Length: 386
Ligand code: NDP
Ligand code: MG
Image (cartoon, rainbow, N blue to C red):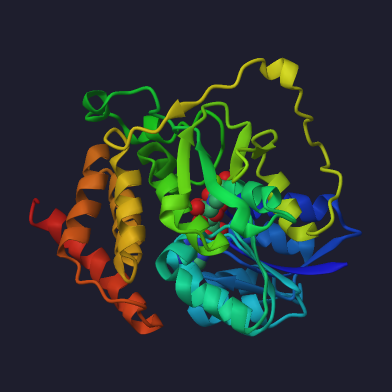
């Protein structure tokens, strides 16, 4: 029986993780959880799973939740201290980090110090501070298991291989909601259209990231840190069916690919059962004859500028990925709230990168300070009318 701390239990990945836990009560139990502001859903989860501790973003919501669940025995905590407590305080062996954004960084670092295996969905953590996370994981001999489908695929393709024989990691990209639109057509797209992803049902921020292709950019940086490959050895290819989740090319020209239905419960469950596998309850088998054809297209970096910016930030290293990530988080929030247009997302990110002063191998406080400063900068551009 594996005991699990789940950060971001109310989100898209969080709910699917709960589904995997509930489907396998003999294998998993939920010992700790965190939510943001959705305390109605938190109450339901507490009633169903009875965890020891639940962290809530704000103390005012924690008070309401405490009064609602009064006799359940679940301790309700709040704020960043609460989130860290949920990550480290129980007997959990695995922390699933499924919060959104760089807010996931500190609990990940603390969970590593507490020697918990990390099942990482929260890619922003690796983008903003990959060197700190990987160094700490090495120091404490803790495994970081990818939940992101592309990275889970690559992790499985690399299984038992000699890293020196790898020519390239090839990440597949569905193209998101606007795959077939020209840049001209992107000028007037709406939030509602952007939120309509053809293959995956996900949280709002990552759905917008998929439409701008920043999601793939963040994943390139995530792959760089997880697998220790130079950016010149990481490639992206458009594959609209999302059946091949990613591939690895070897020196002898062989390519190993990972195929499956677009169902996030598969990589979530794999991270929880690794190195073993369990049957996926209600999993749909992949019949390739039903799929018929798979399509691939060369990536166009002028069409998808966010991906180009991410490669640039990754290659520059230091604080630049922190700037890229924070500017993106702020710009996506502004787009979702109707303050900027779709194409202004990449414009704001580029301007944030242009004004940034880079530092090599930044410490945690420099990263946190840059994250905050970049968000303010992006907001100030908006206030100045750009
Ligand atoms: P969601 O927006 O659906 O969920 C985010 C979760 O984080 C919710 O539980 C939310 O709480 C919580 N949260 C949000 N802001 C804060 C905060 N400031 N403090 C504490 N908790 C907070 O996101 P997804 O599940 O889609 O994505 C989660 C992560 O997984 C992201 O990093 C994403 O890139 C990655 N990922 C997601 C995939 C997917 O299929 N969805 C696929 C691959 C990776 P509440 O709702 O209660 O406010
Ligand atoms: Mg992904």
